[in-house]
Structures are given as structure tokens and as C-alpha cells.
Amino acid sequence: MEKVIWVALGGGLGAALRYGITELANAHGGNLFPYGTILANGIGSFLIGLLFVLFVNHTELSPSVKLFFVTGILGGFTTFSTYNMELLTLLRTGSVLAAAVYFGCNVVGGLLLCWLGYALGNALF
Image (tube, rainbow, N blue to C red; front, side):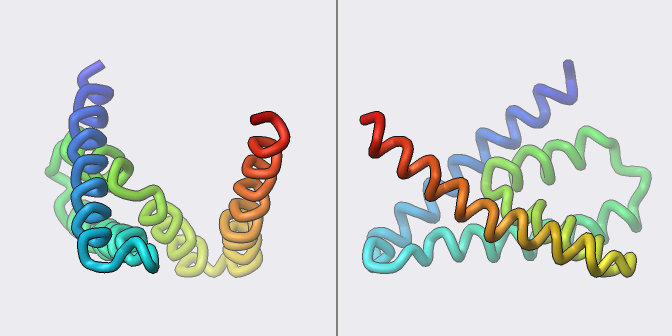
């Protein structure tokens, strides 16, 4: 249960940070182009790469610390960062075909599922 609490606390903080970036971007032209999302995804991707190295090199850190920052804060901030770390891991380990499939499923599949949900929503509502 303690792990769930750390994830929830971090997730709330990450979601609030995401909201703040979106609001800041919207106040400065982000309603014309969604660069707030690009900022959140870019910052999250950078931070998960940085934290990955930190946690590999500092194994004395508690699993709760990792859950709070990665699953919690970055998970609430953006799931795109997790996707990028997993894709990079597949590429680093030489699993190029698996990486290509993973990329396709997330990017193309995600877009298709988003369109399907949008189309279904228009048909139902």
C-alpha cells in the first residue's frame, strides 16, 4: 500500500505540473499550436533518461523514490516519457524489430485508436 501512496502523490504532482505547463503555453500562443504538449513530452523524456542513469548508478535509493519520481511524477506529467525509455531500451539491446513494432503500435496504433474513439464518440453523442 505504501508504494501506491508514493505513486499517487507523485502522479498528482506530475498532473499539476502538466496542467501548469499547458496553461503557461496557452497564455503564450499554445492555443494556436499545442507546444505545451511538446514541452511536457520533451521534458518528461529528458527527465526519464536522466533518472534512469541516476537509479542505475545509485542502487541504494529506495524503490519508493523511483516509484515517486518515475511512475508518479513523470507518469502524471506524461506517459510519453515511459514510451521513449522503453523504445530506447529495445534499441539499446538490439531488438530492432521489436522496437519497430513497439513504435508502430504506439504511434500509428495510438493514432488509429484515437480516431476510432473520436468517430465512435461522434456516432454516439
